[in-house]
Image 1 (cartoon, rainbow, N blue to C red):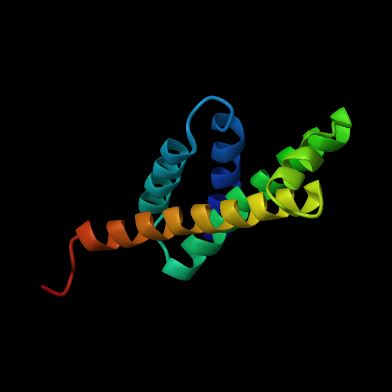
Image 2: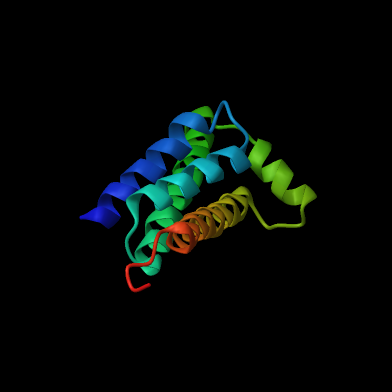
Length: 119
């Protein structure tokens, strides 16, 4: 249940703040969310990665399909990629890795500063 809540919150943060704030600030907010949510590190990584990755996949894909623009294909040609779909896929993978790493970093930071009960 905690993973689902963190996934939804990470995705919502990435979606609603993505157009106004730089990505590194959003990743700091997601790291703060992971500190607050606690839980296992693997679940924090998966929740953050899927939340941000899906947003970074769906927003460009839906914008591209709704506008019918040739811009993604042209940018892909400049970068040496076969088409714009590959460019959107690379963007999604980058969002997956960046979001997951941010949530994992926040989770581990929270575990580092949290008081240990055994001492």
